[in-house]
Amino acid sequence: MRRTAACLLLSTTLPAFAADPVALHCERLFDARSGRVLGEHTVVVEDGRIRSVQPGRARLPDGTRSIVLAGRTCLPGWTDLHVHLGSQSSPASYSEGFRLDPVDYAFRAVGYAEKTLMAGFTTVRDLGGEVTPHLRDAINQGLVDGPRIFAAGKSIATTGGHADPTNGYNSMLSHLMGPPGPTEGVINSVDDARQAVRQRYKDGSDVIKITATGGVLSYARSGDAPQFTEDEIKAVVDTARDYGYAVAAHAHGTEGMKRAVVAGVTSIEHGTHMTDEVMRLMRQHGTWYVPTIYAGRFVADKAKEPGYFPEIVRPKAATIGAQIQDTAARAYRGGVKIAFGTDQGVGPHGDNAREFIYMVEAGIPPAYALQAATVHAATVLGVDDQGVIEAGKRADIIALPGDPVADITAVMNVDFVMKDGKVYRRPEAE
Image 1 (spheres, rainbow, N blue to C red):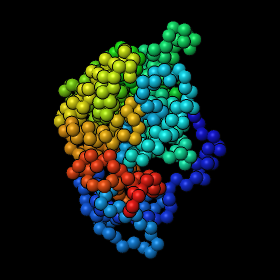
Image 2: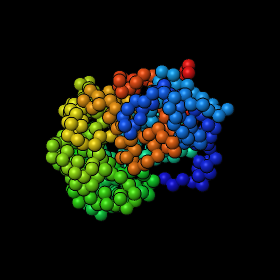
Image 3: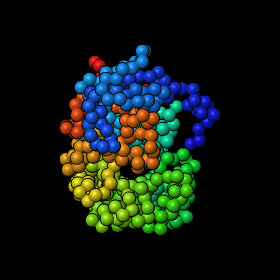
C-alpha cells in the first residue's frame, strides 16, 4: 500500500534513533567477520550509527553517557531471514482464516514483532504475509516497536500449490471467489509470473518469495512435488532482477530445488530433500541455504499431538519436519553457504534464538552459526551497513551474559537490545 502524505510527514517527524552519543562498555565483543570473541571494547554510538570501536575501556569526552555491560558479550543485532510475523501456529490456525480479518492479524503481529526484537533480532525478512508490509511501515514511522523488516508480502504460488490462498476451500466458496490469479500471487505461465512480481512491486514488497515445491502446513497432499516449471521460475527471477529484488524459494523436494537453483534464486528455504547434486548446483550458482531447523523440529513434535494439525497435514509434518536438521548438517559439511532463518510463525515468535542451538547440535560451529545471523544474513539481504560492529555501520547491537561461542545456550539470555542507536532493552542492573 502506498504511504499517504500524512504517513510520510509522520515518518519524518518521529525520531528514529537517539541523537546524543552513548558509549557501550562491552566485556567481550563478537567480531562477526572473523568469528572470534574479542576482549573488552568500547563502542561509541551517535545519530543511529557506530561512531567508533575501541579496545579496552576508552577515555570519553565529558558528558558522554555510558552503559556498562559487565560480564556480557556484545554482538551485532541478529537477522532472522525467514519469519511470518502475521501469524503463529496453533490448532485453530486453519479455521481462523475464515473468521478473522486482516486487522486481527495486524494487531497480533504488533506483539509478535516486539517479542522478536526483544529476543535480539533487530532485522527480519518476512517471507509471506499481507499485513507485514504495513507493519514494516508502522515500525519505520516509530508507531510500534519491532525489528527492521524486509517484507515479501504475498508469496507467489501455482494453482493448488503451497501458498494458493484457496486451498481447502469447498466448491461453493471456490465458485464465489473465482480462481486466484497473479494479483493474488497465483501463476500458471511465464506471463503470469512476470505479472505477479510486478504486482508485488506495486504492493511495496522488498523481496520476492516463491513456493517452488509443496509445503508441510498447506492444506494439500504433497509436501515436496515441484510446482513451477523452470521457465516460470526464471521469469520470476528475471523480472525480480529488473526491480532490484532477490528471490527466496521455499523448497522441500529435490526436483523443485534443482529448478529453482538453476533459474537463479538467491536462497533455498528448508531444503529438506537436498541431495549431493543439489548441493553441487548451489555451490556452482552461489545459492544460499536457509535451513529453518526450528520449524522442522516444531512441526514434527506437534504431529504427535492428535488434533493439532488436520489429518492431510499431519503425515507431512511427521516425515518432512524431522529431516531438516540432518539436511543442515550435510549441507554444512558439503560446503553450501548457510544463513540463519527459523520460519517463526510456525513456532512461537520470540524463541528464534533456539535455532542457533539446533544448528550447533547439527555440527555447525557456534561461531559460524552466529555469522549466519549477522554477516551472512546481511549478504543475503544485499545490504552492507549492518551485521558487524564497525565504525559507520548501523548501531544494531545486542548483548548477553557469557560467551555464546563457548556456550551456545547463552543466546537465549539476551538482555540488551539497541536498534539504530535506540535502546529497547537493558539489563536491570548495569
